[in-house]
Length: 242
Length: 210
Image 1 (cartoon, rainbow over the protein chains, first blue to last red):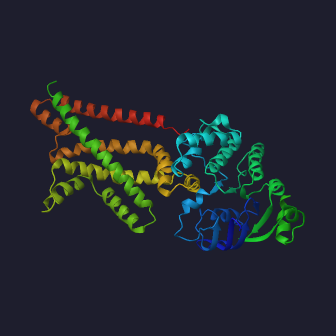
Image 2 (cartoon, each protein chain N blue to C red):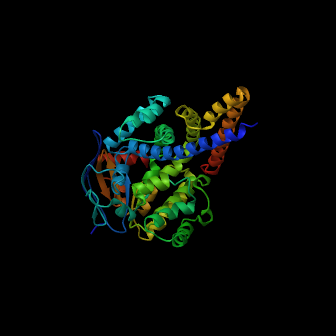
Image 3 (cartoon, rainbow over the protein chains, first blue to last red):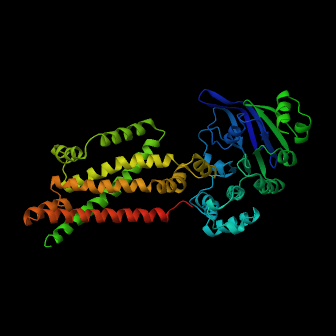
């Protein structure tokens, strides 16, 4: 059974309907990249998957939990779904170590020493073992984003959501972050990635979803979608960016 | 100067009232601020009405209302000390509430979103992420309001509390040295307020956003 199931998802902000009728599934260990013009609803779609946005209508089932059910404990579900933001959103008043260990300690009830041990492994993995005691303000954008990834991984999530993780980075920082994401994909993490990095989508994506105007217009394997797009809107979009 | 011990006795009372009232006022302000930000309209409305009422009336009127007005009701009874502390506390609370609310709202929404996405509850998010950052930002305004509250306590001499100002009056008429006495009283207030702002500066540097 697929680990993410989205049925007839609709999202309105006031009168503005941002997601009109979204149906999608993601399998375990799959890497799905979501592309599309700005305003197409791709970020909103991603944010509905851990209910950072309230869902107006439809159904979203994450790892067997129907998160559209108001009675569900959404905090429990979010423990299984890591998220990485465009603006990093590291906690500026906490060190890198504290950023990573906060949630394992406060939510999972891990001991400080266990959480720090794990955090060190994760920092090692993202290539920042020397930055444990630094504050976010002392890091570059690329370093911040790698800490943010480590922070999300510290909860041992089953799914990772990436909301334009490289869009706010200087070009020379993008590679380091993508490298970490590639490693994750290779290790078999289920990933949904909203991105403008077509290279990453092509290389690492098992599937690419093209969104426009609040709909999923087309989805396919990257080679098919990039090499042989079926819809006019997909063609128009790709011709502009490739 | 023979009057000095009396003035310092008054200072003790002033500080005692100030410390209790400012702590109570801060807790009240925090509660009111959270009510203002609550999704429940009724809580928001109650808090706003309370804040508006306090901000829209003079301190002396509030003091008289609480000490003379409320005390005249048969089922209420408290001494001038309690009335004074309550008045300073609700005054500080109302102003603190707006400072704290603005401070919380000034924290980028992404901070709370990141915390929630990590599975923290809304309470934990407030406690560990939003409030600590908001307080740092609020510290200068909080200090200002605390200084105003400290000065407000001098008005409590009107209802017979033997604070620094009251002791000044007593000593001025007892010694016929009004100039010296009131200059000394002024200097004592100034020193306390100066120390308060030094403390605030220290805290600000200590908690500086890195």
